[in-house]
Structure formats: structure tokens, C-alpha cells
Figure 1 (cartoon, one colour):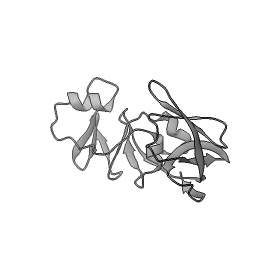
Figure 2: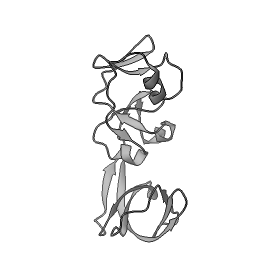
Figure 3: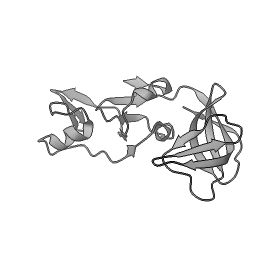
Length: 164
């Protein structure tokens, strides 16, 4: 299955990086390089739970975990499996401007941090505040509007673009 930025909200994070798209299905098993990635014959709706329950010992190692779609956008590879066990190819289809804004204020909440940026009307919610010394945030613009917080910087970098 090939997905684009329009389908990012349908993914179940975390997702895991796969080395290539030469996977195969057989009798409820998903194989990659002769090893089992997922065993849908096991109970559970999550990939991790099924991998823990499977009696097979030759499991394909899932080494790289990506927790958010911002992390997915930064990947140079394009083959993944989500937490539901659905393998997919992420295809970068559009070009988004990347613009840097000064961080105006940070509101620490119990389980997140809300960032307000100078010149951006809506705040961004992030899991933790940026490290000390970072006073700018790079934001991807979709259709000219702020879309995704991309990264942090100590200085205001030049405007650029990314394919997403």
C-alpha cells in the first residue's frame, strides 16, 4: 500500500522502518527476508502484542521506531509497518515551505508543552519543551499555512523547503 501526506492520520504510531518493500503474506504471516514480521493468527490488534505471542522464533528485528508523523517526514527511507501490522510505502508528493519563527512563549502542562511562535496564530503542542538555547522553531507550511513543527534552531535559518 502506498500512502501520502493526506493519509498520515490513518496510521497507528509508533511505526517501524523496514529495509525494503519485498514483503510477502502467507497463512496470516507477514514475511520479510525469510523472517516473520507479523503473525496475524495471534490474538490482539497491535503488532507488538502479536509478536510477543507468536510461537515462531525467527522474527525480523524492528530496530528503528518512529513515534510521530514529523519523524516520518524526516526519513530518507520510505518503507514502514505501523502498529496495526500494515506495511506501507510512504511517497513524498508535495513540496512544503520550511520557515523559522521565534519562540514567543512556552506553556508547560502536565503531559505536554504548548509553544507559541511569533507570527503564527495557533500554538503547537509538543511532548516536551525544546532544549535550552533553542529560540527558533522550523514550521512546514502547507498551502501557505502553518502545518507541522519540523525542528528547532538556535538561530533563524533561511527559508527553504522540504518534500513531504
